[in-house]
Image (cartoon, rainbow, N blue to C red; front, side, top):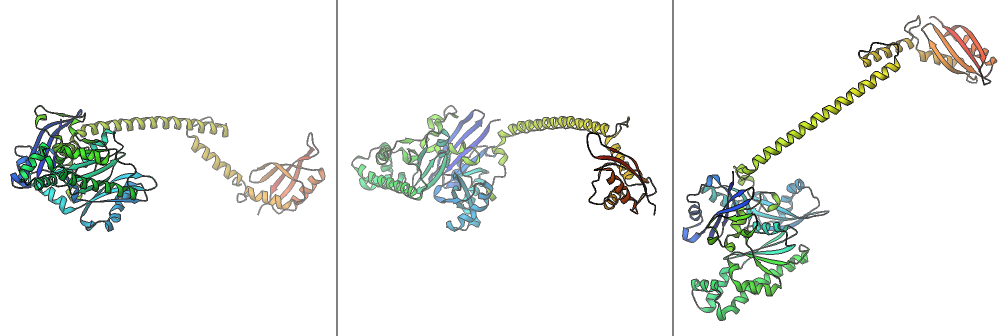
Length: 510
């Protein structure tokens, strides 16, 4: 189901609104409205008039606040992690803001990340955002995103990727907002005290006519001999812009000079302003037209009443992407929308598909893991059985090789401890110790085989000559541990000069 979105541009003199339908192929403009606030009797009445007959309960609203309401700061933090930035940015900005941070909304964009994070932050008192959301609630509207004028237009320009560094000037009736951007990042926003009304007032004073007549002449480009007076006002504005750029360069916040100037707003319709700006900055100046984007179309009959200079901001708001790096969002904290799901309703089916795909992937992974674990287990069982057969070849019936081998080891341990004989308290190590202590350390004596059945010790050994054999026997006879030491045999070892002999000793009783 296509999603209906309302882009709401609430200015000081008028409210502009663009309704679009968002689908898989892009956006279609289905409605355009422009309401004069003074004629409607105030902002609240203008909003109500704008929404008359509009099913606002089923529409997503995206709006913005004027840049002049914000405080902008550029700071650097010695880390990159977003969570750490979120936790520390409030404390970093606290001494730099003109109002308490406890009642302030803060958002930021990361301009550059190297060893440090270059941050461009915006802050606004909660009361300003509260006033806006209160007006919307009075009309049964809820803002899913609250951005900064005219950041959504800049986001649209940057998404085209054709400009490395540029300057957008939103020239309204009473003020201008400048946004400096480059490398798909916004790194400066400034409010200028210049608008279309300044040109009208200058023309009215110079020509000695009423403001309404001066406004008509301005729109028609009929300034006559008063053009020079208007040029002075414009050049003063241009000089402010140049000074701003120079200051940013001195601070190291401007790596490249803007390669192009983009204009929007009603004040940009005055043609001599554009011509003088091109001459002053020696840069190309272009009028923005968000509706010319490839992913935006218009329903039948909309184009005839659509003025890009007036409706750019409202359209850019309506077509704004919800992702974080698309701009700023001050619909947070107590102003966070309660019906956020409506903004992302079209994504629910894709989320369901993604979840299903993830579950299928996890299931396949679990099956593969089980299969290979089973293969590994079978291989280990085969290896255990093989080891058991080598260790216990006399066993023909194998039921639990691990348990059976454990029993065999225990039996062997009991046997080696002398548990089957009269001297069951004597350990094999004790006997070896006694033999070592009984035989002189100077005697060449190497035991090659040792057997102990609990009562009798049988030893096969080697020494250097027959005299040493007698000596070893004599020394063992003196030990209190052994009795009846006998030499079963003593022979020269083949292919050598050493003597091999067998000893048999009885364990002396207690």
